Every structure is written in C-alpha cells, then in structure tokens.
Image 1 (tube, chains in turn green, purple):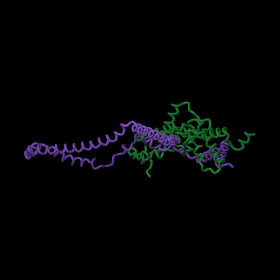
Image 2: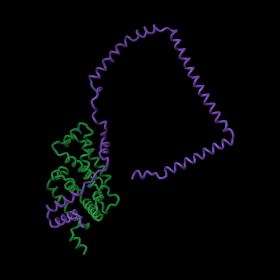
Image 3: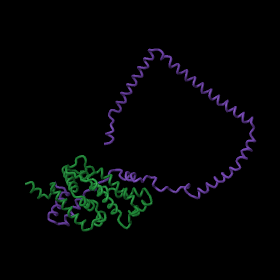
Image 4: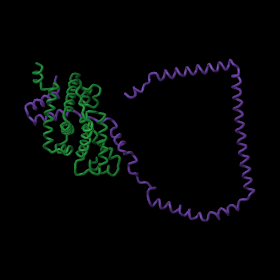
Length: 200
Length: 179
C-alpha cells in the first residue's frame, strides 16, 4: 500500500488512480468535519468536494515533510470558515430532526442491531442530544471537538489545520468540553442525581 | 436497564462538574469513540473526480508503437520514396495507355451497359408482382361492406391496444424507483 506522500507524488504526475485513492482515503474524515461544521448534509457534500478539488489544484504546494492529512484539514478548515462567513447567520437545528437527520449520529446509532427497543431509543436520543450540543458550539470550538475527539487528530495537527497556537487549541477544547457538558445537562442528560433533583 | 454508553456519559458529566479535567477528557473520548463518524454519500469519489476534470483521458497515455519517434521515421521514409517516385508516374501511365486499344474500351463499356439494363429489368418484374398483390387486396375494399368491416376492425384493435397499454403501465411509477 502506498504512503500518503507516494500517492501525492503519483497524483502530481497525473495518475488518475492516485487522485481517486486520495479521495477514498480521506473522504470520510473530511466529509465528517465539514458536515458537522455546516450541519447541512447537502451543502456539506458540495463543500467537501470543493476541498478535494482545491487540494488537487494545489498539490504542487504540498510539502511532503508535513503530514498530508494536516494539509488537507487545513484546506477543509479554510474552505469551511469561508463558507460560514459567507452564509451567516448560521442555522442550528434546535428541534430534533425527523426524516432529515441523514447521516447524523442519531442515524448511526439507531442501527437495527439493538436487541432492546428501549435501549435503541435511548441511544438514538443520546446521539441526537450530542449532535445538538455539538451544533450549539461556536465554529472554532466545534471544529476542535470534531478534529480531536471524532477524527483523532493530535493537538499539533489541530494547530496546523486551524492555524491557532497550541495554547489556544487546548483552551478551546477545554471550554468546548465544558459547554458540551452544559448543553447535555440542559437537554436533560445530566448525571442521575441531577436528573432526580430536577425532577423533584 | 442503563446502557454502558449512558454510564460513560454520566461519568463524563460528573467529572466536568467536579473539575476533574483528565477524567472528563478520557470519558468524553470514550463516548465519542463509540460513535462511528459520518460517511459521505455513495459515489462521492466519482463526483469529486468528475468535478475536478480528472477523467480517464487525464491519465498518461500508455506507451504505444505508433508514439515512438523511430517508428514514425521509418514510416515517413517509404512515404517520401513514394512521393519522389511520382515523378515517373506520367511516363508509366502513358506506356500503359498504349497497351489498351479503343475497341477494348468500347466493348467493356457496352457489356457494363447491358448488365445494368438486365438488372433494372428484373427489378421492374418484382415491382409488377407487388402491384398485382396490391390490386388483389384493394379490390374487396371497393365494396362498402368490406371497407366498413375493415375500419371497424382497425378501431377495435386500436381501443384494445390502448386498454392493454393502460393495464400494463397502471402500477408503474418512477417514485418507486427513486425511493
């Protein structure tokens, strides 16, 4: 299997299969990041495609010494931020989505493998709450959370992608986690004793 | 019964409340780790390549015998030789013309003309046969009763065809295909 750097080299030489392999290898993390940032699946696909197109056009500017995924995340970051700036005010799904929650955490968790319907419903509700909590974060926090917790990016990679200093990234992640917890509690998913206290 | 995922959620939220940052981070990571990331729609890669203009023609052409400069040179040499030899073409044609007499040419022309006339004659015979069959079929139609019966049959068959078509296409809908 070719390394990312070798793939890029072949793509630069005009090999279509190398370009395809790059897309196949990184379509999931890039789409996941863009979709969570935008909260709009239709726009997310369009923008994720744009990320790859931009990457192919700028392949000669890629430094093989750097990690390719970081370089690609950087393009995704810039493209998404540009889009969010152009398309303000940002829409946030306040109500639970019904049929429109294509590709959401709720859909992912609501798999048919759940033997217990109640457990399945609980997982779906929890996923929806998490989804909504992520959507309620400000874009820079949301991006850090998605990259760090969902895409497994390191602090350094987040720094490279977002162009933020290490300290800011750590602070963003800390505050994002706090806000996420607050949103989850507000949505009724607090610890058992909190729920009991609120119920009484 | 509470799910393990719910326990992790509680653990995370309790750790956040108690300001135990490391524990909170680990619990949140465990919670998210259980959630598979979003998958792009099917055919995403194809659409990207299409939009980027990376069609199969962008692939470097494989080596071919005809793309070699040496092979092209070898082909050009005989063509050049043919071009130069064209200088000797008029005297050669003149010599060949002397071999053929005028009477031979007339004989060949006459034979061709006779052959063409024969072919046209056989075609005219075939056409005559079709005319005979057409007249035989048209004669009964001159009778009003037969013509009426023919028109009635045509109408009945058209209505039957329409009914059959409606019956076949009744349950078809593109919606079923799209969903």
